[in-house]
Image 1 (cartoon, one colour):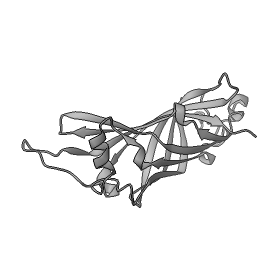
Image 2 (cartoon, rainbow, N blue to C red):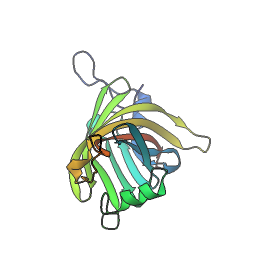
Image 3 (cartoon, helix red, strand yellow):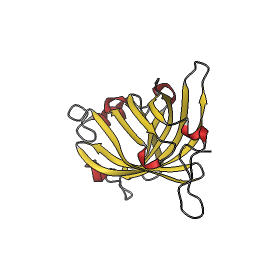
Image 4 (cartoon, one colour):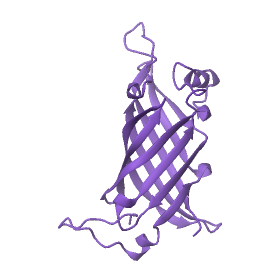
Length: 199
């Protein structure tokens, strides 16, 4: 059973079960158990995977009304990690993220929806290089539990796709065999664990 209320066959919002209502509250992302990653096609033949190691985020979950739920995320761009120091340095440079001038990437939700089952969708504003464009993230609710330290946790897995050129990330190099070195389409992956704030 998910966090948000479902809609029945008459398209009338169903009353939330008591256990769902208990999950309503403010949550903070746990960076030790949260992963924010991306995948880009390289040289037209393989994928390069990377992640961001430093970020902060917050959720407001409403067990009765999906539209009242919100999310925010702030990512430190210097923390980008693709497993290759030279490539990471290039990504931080003026060719890509210009991290000296734009140290953060941010997301602020504007809409949340329950899609049925454990599936949800959140839409918001993604800001990169000072440019803000809409982003839609499809989420699967992984459940809620109390950990051995007494923390109340919720978990989500999410995915989205963007065209990096829409945020001004246009650097590329042509290949002798045709095509380009780095794909415009970037896949984003979110594996989220969040801890409920103390009342």
